[in-house]
Structures are given as structure tokens and as C-alpha cells.
Length: 208
Image (cartoon, rainbow, N blue to C red; front, side):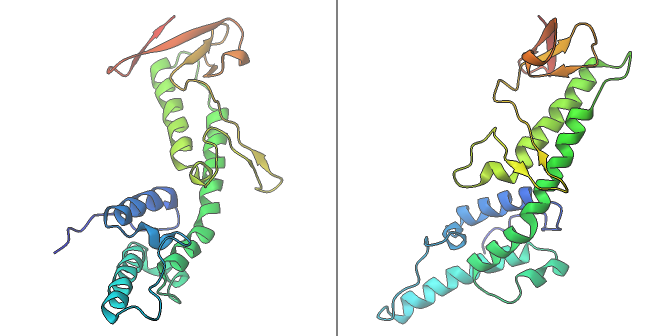
């Protein structure tokens, strides 16, 4: 019996991580091609029944793996098909933009965050780093074919929001020496910066 891989089911809010985890399982089982246009070609009419049946079995496995990892109330989006490519595409169209708006919210939290007077600098740095990692990890634009990681297009949410990302070293952070509540990984945005250098394997930073 094949080993069952535990995946959190798609619930409408976790699409980026769900997509990545299901992709890994499909790849591990040699079924990822069924979600990609033109990667798995059905046998022609002259193929033997054994070949046709083997192809259909693999297609059914890909579809069922996708469907069984979707919350029951969301299966309506794929219940009209048994084609894994159609199911995968339907879910992508339905939930990927929702994921984009979540990234917009994370960006707003990131750029609005400030450290309270007398607050813990390292806790604030950890919080900012966590937000940055969530943005990078969850942004669906980074996974689109031909997409350039580190660059985000303008997104329409109401009047439109431009997402900003740095192309520099994300491990280098700078603190405004005149107002230590201001911190960024873009040196050009502040005056008289102190650099924060990570100490390997400690989770701590040194001023420099």
C-alpha cells in the first residue's frame, strides 16, 4: 500500500502552501505532468487497451490526489470534471488571486510596522524578518512561468497597489541611528545607518 502523505486540505486561505505541497506529492509519484498542458498525452486510438488503461489509471490517481486534498465545501469547483489538468486550473483561477491579496496585506503590515520607544530591537527584527519571509514564500507571482523572483507587478485591489521588494541581500539590515524604530534592508532609504550583521547559527545580530 502506498504511503499516505499528510497535507493540509485546501481551505481557501492556504492556497500557496497547498499548491506547493500537492505539487511535491504529484512529482514524487510521477504525476505532476497531468497538471501541465501538453505534458501527458493520451494514447492514440491504435494503442492497446493495457496502455490506455494504464494511462487512465495514472490520470485518475492525479485527479483523486488533488480532489481528496480539498475541503469538501470547496470540491464544487472541481466536481464537474475528472481531468486533473482542468481541476488544477480551476483551483488556480479561483484561489490564486485571493493569495495575491493576502500578500498585499502582508506588505502593508511590513511597511507600516514600527518599533515602540524602548522596545526590544531583536524581537522587532525577528518580526520584520518573519513578515518578509511570509511575503516571499506565499507570493504566487514568484511561481509563475517566466516570473522574476524579487519583482512584483502592480496588482489591482480597489485602486491598485504596487508591491515593493528589494533585490539586495535580505540578510543585511540597517537601523536609522537617529530613530532606531526605523529599520529596513535598503541602505539608501535612511540617513546615518547602522548595519546589522547576522551571527551564523545563533539567530543573533551584531551592530557594525
